[in-house]
Length: 113
Length: 117
Image (cartoon, rainbow over the protein chains, first blue to last red):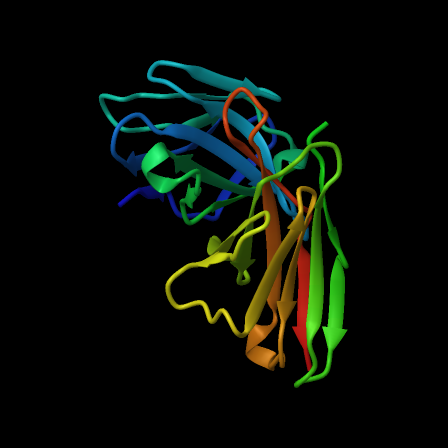
């Protein structure tokens, strides 16, 4: 079956630091890959996505590249802000899963001023 | 566009009572909606897949008689927690599949926090 592994948090950073959250996956075929963000007390918001190999998803300064050869989809941001403090989830879906999302465990990020 | 709402956003109830949570797609039709449960500081656990006009498909280990799901229209799915107990306290999140999009993307509601006393 499908699975997603992402680095455990919490990750604590200073403002303007570089952020990387590793995500690797196991799936058949060519899954679609996603990063979601969850702010305290809220639901999930789609941050970015990539639907085929070598695609780069980007949004709000965050980027992630779909690497088929390493089955990875690492999230990066060059200069974080306090407002980026949240929990980040890597996820995937494919036809075999019938559009069900498989989530990683989530990574809590805390950015200090 | 592609907004999903949930109601209520939070609810406190007594043990033994039933609670209904609504999930609505506001500006698109959703033939499929998903219900998730999230425990504190944990990831989302898929409970069931709700298809308009048919019975929900429950994940292994989820009691269908405990968590009743109804998807009566293309914009509304409801989750009823029957005879709630304190262990049912959790954050419940729904998502709706926008099948009309370029690819099948799930849009998430803001969640409902249930506390059972």
